[in-house]
Amino acid sequence: MPPLLAERITVNPKQCGGRPCIRGMRIRVSDVLDLFAAGLSSKEILDEMPDLESDDLKAALLYASRKLNHPVLVA
Image (cartoon, rainbow, N blue to C red):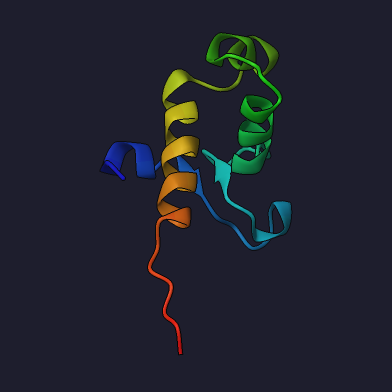
């Protein structure tokens, strides 16, 4: 993940159960992904959550992509 985007994703064990959030806010990466999955556009998400920025949405998608794209070792 590009460094500037990576900095937008924070994990704090004392916030949101340690789930990845956007810039230390209580907006989880999964919240953003759920909105995309529900069919909202980037513009609609930004309108719905005015504290978010366009790069936050990119960071959430890249974070999810990186977490899913890992090798699976078979024993």
